[in-house]
Picture (cartoon, rainbow, N blue to C red):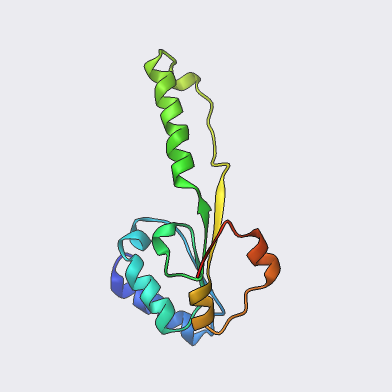
Length: 126
């Protein structure tokens, strides 16, 4: 997929094949078309989970905590400015993830979110 028309065709195919839900990855295409994707998911009443808070109109967002990543990147920059060689620094992966559930979207889709999932959420949008 490279164009917005491809996204619309992908949604049409998902509906034809009776998809139960949608998982949207985080790449340049999805970020460039985030409102189209959110709008199409709402139009087709397709529950969706996204990897970034930019998709705040979605049902669920589960992804890395970007402020935490930026703080960690700043600590790397600090070490480099103090003389550390970048090649000597450890490779790190994200360690802090967030689960955000949009209860307004759940209600609009007619979904009941299990209390066990609500209890584990980092934030609820009401």
